[in-house]
Length: 265
Image 1 (tube, one colour):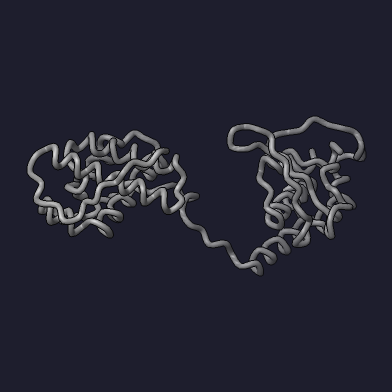
Image 2 (tube, one colour):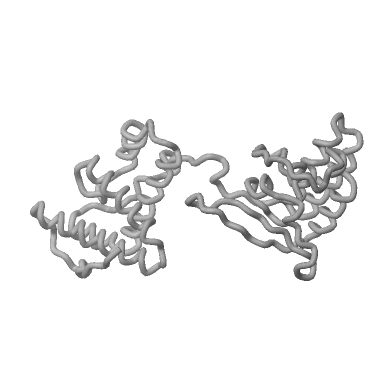
């Protein structure tokens, strides 16, 4: 993204002609882009913000600083109603960020030049709500996590189907200890465990990147994950079959990750 010269916009006279208003809008937007770039925001994110602002500007047909909450009620409630929730959340965030910029830096200038007191039209009533998994989640204390898995492990032998229960327990406990992705658990095999690397040993996790390319990473067997895998291989793994060295086909369901891994080394 290239940068343009940003004209100073303080101490402007009252705007009268449509061209004066358009120039003022452009100066504000240019300074906004420059400020976001100075903050280290990625070019793609800045472009997304600008696209959202231009879309709302085209929809309302007047300067953005004139928007009020009821305008966005109609924009998101009617014009954008059928769009994906995440798309609306991103547009609302772009608008909120831009209006924060206007209020912090140019509220007085805009009021002096237009007579409008800038107010962010995105409020707690019309703000697009993301899905639950998009909100900030506070993880439980480590002691609670340990108590959960300790109780789960104690109940394994009373499970109606021991083999899948112990497999699921091992997969979930490993995820809690070293944080592999579900896709990485699905591809895990016994020979991916490198007992001799590092102080604790390491495990090779294989998955896919954001563009579909294959990615691999070595993760240390810390936080008790080595002991967990040793326990799995020394006992529960044999509940599935006795052919440790015979390859089998991989399965994609997350619940099948651990037994497939164990049997395929």
